[in-house]
Image (cartoon, rainbow, N blue to C red; front, side, top):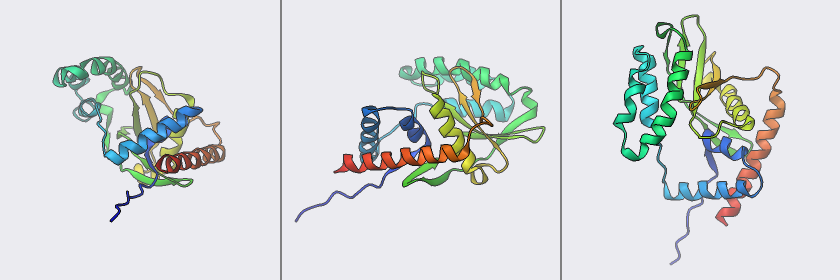
Length: 214
């Protein structure tokens, strides 16, 4: 009696898909193959969870960075260098928000969408509401290297595309957390061009996923 391995449909988080579009040549196929095997093993670990909680706590409780300043001492020794590298930029970002009394957290929701033939989960880290009525859906970038233009464009476009579900009437924001730099949509970007580009990337991703499974 033979046992067949169930087919795992192609799927990516927004983080994985935007990392994929920033790659070129054979690195794309290698990346997709790694994602598929990771999903088969159901493995994966987020080392940044404590830092996100600390940043959100400082915003919610208007504590000006005390949670971020203490979070490095709470993580395991192996993660301390990472937290030391990221927390300084996180403090810069927190202070860039202005008066703590004029900004608070807003509840965001995830969205599952189709980009071409590919299912992609859109998942900002948190939302903000400002005293003047502005809202922002925030996605954090933790990597050592700054986000490429492709990562910035794809991330902001995917969030904007589903803002009605994520946080109505909000602006998408990508924060390069190590450097404390905030990226916002470029008004000159042509939405139709980005849609076609991402659909093509998604089709190639799906083909590579199926090839890796063969």
